[in-house]
Length: 137
Image 1: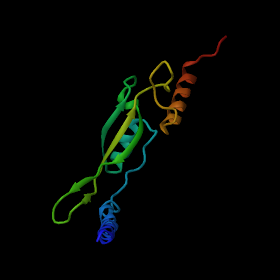
Image 2: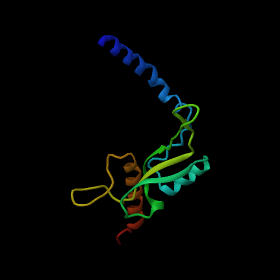
Image 3: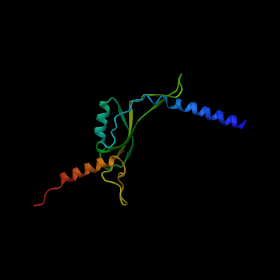
Image 4: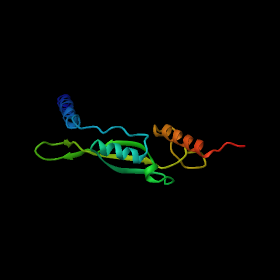
């Protein structure tokens, strides 16, 4: 009896798992804007037909338009009706922003050097440093 219950539970679980993900397969994916300035990412995503919403902001040392997109994902919406657990294709993209101008250290807050956006920010900071430095006479 116990063996039959376990077998029935395993079969039920195995057949329901593919149904849960079936609505997500057709969902459109927004272009990846990770590592870009927020202002550039918003322009690119709007051009592609998406709306952008900031879900998380880390730091407050840069204007929002200069913050880097640390991560993003499409927002999915569950629809309950005649078909259970079907996801709507959402054209809304949620982004997390890093608004620190420098990497974190033991003494100050900053962005994570392990974040993919860190390379872009390091290049941006190097360009700023090159512009502000003047040759010595």
